[in-house]
Length: 209
Image (cartoon, rainbow, N blue to C red; front, side):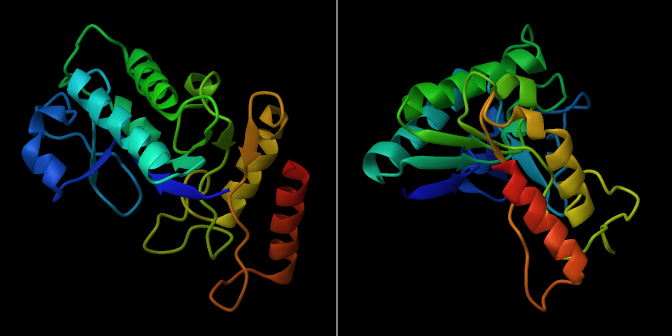
């Protein structure tokens, strides 16, 4: 089935959306736009407690399903809807409540027949709403993160070791809560992976089911 990648709660700092709706963007406790903390790129998070944001996300998802005809949605950087900071529309809501609102909006827009793959999403919040779930950090062309990435953060940054460990430790979720998404296998001369590391990746991905 055809699928499309979207990041419904992420907003590029130079985008038209950021210029037109600065009030939709989560601010940190110092009043500045909150950093999504994504590796290598600064972008904003759209506040899921804001009704305007939820309508925008609902309309975007409906367009992808109804007008563009996609049956599969991979929705990335979902954590951006609940970044830390007190600069949000509804101060009475916790970050968990904001995440729940965002995911509920997505599922309502997509309908029950659309296969939703969550990515960059707090695991517990997603259980009632997604059909598949990314259970690891990004894989990468090296076993451990390499410069300019900090080599000591080998659990969350793009690299094969973190992907394998995350996938194995979260394998019990598969076929219970959702279909596990262990990320892809990288091959070819563009990587620095050894044959043993590639075989390890293929084996773990295969066992994920």
